[in-house]
Amino acid sequence: MLKLINFRNIIYTLGFGLIIESIFMVFMIPFGLYYNENTLIAEIASVLITLGAGLFLLLLSHNKGHSYYNLRESFITIGLIWILIPLLGVLPYLLTHQISGFENAFFESVSGFTTTGSSILTDIESLPKSILFWRATTHWMGGMGIIIIVVIIMREMRINGTHLMTAEGSLLGIEKIKPRIIDVAKRLYLIYFILTFTEMLLLMFGGMTFYDAICHSFATIATGGFSTHNSSIIEMSPYIQYVIIAFMVMSGINFTLHYFFLTGKLRNVLHDEELRVFLVIIVVAVLLVTFNIAPLFSHFENAFRQAAFQVTSIITATGFASYNYELWPNMSHMIIWVLMFIGACVGSTGGGVKVARYIIAFKTAKLRFTHILSPNSVKTIRYNKIKLTSRNIQSVSAFITIYFFMFIVGTLVICSTGTDLHTAASSVITTLGGIGPGFGKIGPINNFAGMTVFAKYYLSFNMIIGRLEIFPILVLLHPAFRKA
Image 1: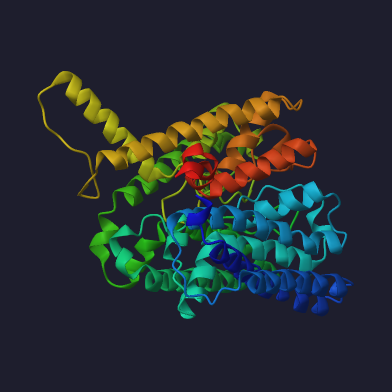
Image 2 (image 1 turned 90 degrees about the horizontal axis):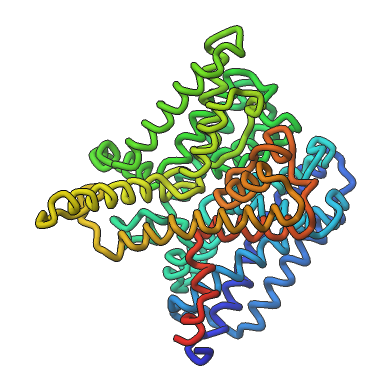
């Protein structure tokens, strides 16, 4: 098997990824200078170490950059780059002494790049603004997928890395336009940038400073949830909360639909099954929670806004908090729990199982009941009017099964560290689904600081495997991968 792998390809891509990461690191330095912070030397050191590591790997690869990446090399590269990038991403935290303990810095870094939004920070506002900007930047880098940035730039240098994007799963759901996958990836990133810039302007119009606006825009569009304030969005104006709600919804939608909308293909948008179900789930959940919590608020609008914000934040896996939802009635708790298991749309920056998979799973169950009642009937499953193969259906069923299995096993593992069941279960589903806050000791006004060292590493792995849609990591661990 080793003979079939071109390790130069892998090392070259890892080096390229680190160089890009070092470029993104540079942008925190101007904020440190503007706010007169004493972090300059440590931040420059972080940039140079990351850049040096990247250049070293490029030289080590001896790769001219024209080789073709096969699928096996792609899976290995994806697994390594999603570990290596967060590993170097800890440098600004550790060298500036803003986060103590490698496990804490690694957890925060992984949470940022995977756009999970879970945190070990107990006093966010005490950190330098430049470090908080880096924290927000990790969200924006990871939102559309680290590897997409790498592949787009590599393609400009005539390097073929299309398989890498397929393996990462960040552009899941763009099969209809796959022949032009690189060109489409560029356009989707342009949409990503436009949404970020537009939200930033709207937040500034609502009274946010440029710094807060750009950090919260990075976190919203990437569905990450890192805020620059200890209270997240709780103390912000209704206008700002509504703006963030709107952009969380847009970020939870398949970005291919944004592409179709901008290119005038409205039929593709209006007839998309997943979009319709996604919006119906949000509307129904918001109404149920609103009427359930209405007695707690003096104004119905406030109840509606809080319900809309938290429902949208949870289902899109953004993780911002506008209210301590643990104070709400049990019915609302249950709805939030259910939303944690649903997730956003495929091809979005959101996490979770994804709505499309549930649609296919329900159609499969319905077909099974039909066959039981009418054994001779011949019917097929269609999704967006496209006939699904048995392989498609098996893939969805396998994903959902493994997802819930990992949730159960993970809960047992975290419980073994002495964590109570409520906290353990929510910590696993919130990190696996890239959501951020949970219940119990990791609720919307708490954090993961009290977790054991082992739990922090385990949940960090959970974030990575969830961000990569499970299969790329499991493929690497499967014995058949090594024997093939």
